[in-house]
Length: 602
Image 1 (tube, one colour):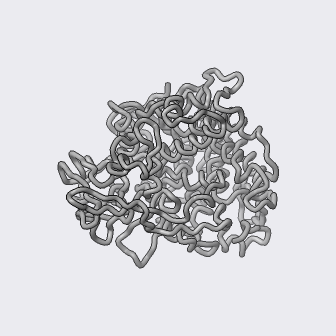
Image 2 (tube, rainbow, N blue to C red):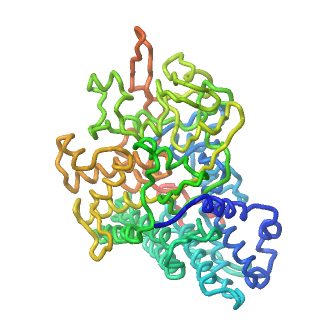
Image 3 (tube, rainbow, N blue to C red):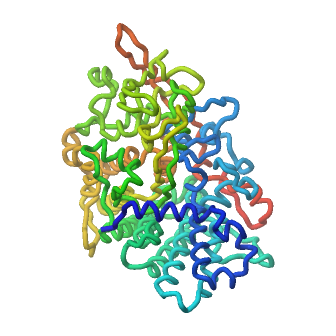
């Protein structure tokens, strides 16, 4: 089993600091002003360089999980939420994307300046700026002195290949086929390079992870200076994610417009792509390094503590790769509900998402059922209570208040002011309002962005395996074989929900490949809510055009002392055009590279 402890927390925080502290030679003197001989002939400097390369991930944009400009989450650009902010005259990036008000010349998405022409993730935080660092390391790590152990040399080079693959994935995720950059360009090089096909891009990314696997240690990291770095488990997990995308409808066929454009799709469908994705996810399962986090006394506590229980010595075997920072309250600040001093509003969950949470017996919530409609927040999936603040939600401690009950009905204390939710809900997932008190500007908690966790691996496996072989498929030769149903059962058991068979029985439905597909989509929506998954999922599934092009909220009024609910209120329109399946390539890149081809319809 993979081990994590307070030692682990210390190591990750050290990695965070190395990329920015004044003592770091790569902060004081950029790599461009050091010779390769100076940097890579010194083991400490070479390791510092790799540490700094880790800081090019999207989670490094800010200490908050609200990364988009305007302090918004990507969730607010899809059907999960809408973004509420006090400054109504300057919409957040999420609001602009929802309104269709974005394009090739308006590419700054992240809340910090990218320092490269404001073209967002094309260059920084998952873009080519990080690719350059990885390429530089791969080119020059052979200069390491002979006194360094082979394990050390291999580990650094393996990390560089992993990071290069991950950076290319972040680009692929938004743009499809992209220019593959596998060398550090010099000033004299011709950089007028073309986009590679989608197939070439996927193959390159997977090959980078394969090369990293061959170089990285066979065992999980246990030493304090290594824990938290990319390991073999992370390589297998991200390879599975890439292959899952490649097997999905958006890519695995003639494309969004039926043109077979090789920059955005394979052109023809191949079921074997699902098998490859399932096999990659099975590799993670077979490692037996990870388990779902179950440190709570019930499903709700398990799920809440998964995101909050850090820095206190508790083990978390679910974490595979991501970013842990020192104590702060930035995410709480960005999503602090109205009704308090210093409120921001922030990410306000949609009624569409709230309705998706099942009843505790696995049946679906239905507003047409009078009993359920009268008490819509009772007997729901425990993950609902760990994720959503709703009217009547009660907390023994909430920020600087005690025994606090939320009032999001019309005229209620949490439904007034310019930061008031328009959906009647606020975000609770990720938050630690027992330790963090934005109203008093005090307190803090460790916050980890788990870009990859074991629950996603199980969901990725379930989807790919079901698509290839159905509900009872198992990978041949697996040391820990598992069916899609068994993978889902692990997630539901952790959350205190009935298993798949019981759930289908309670719904009066039979299990088939088609019905389980729908169930997997739904389970993924709930388990991975607000984790930057839904935005891309509904695109790769090509479901977005069939979804309502608006966000619903719930108007709650008090009549005869009782709440009355109207869940039909439209609070935000969502503009989706076919071109929005992919991001536009920044116009500045089109202008300076005659070989660059724009994505369709932009």
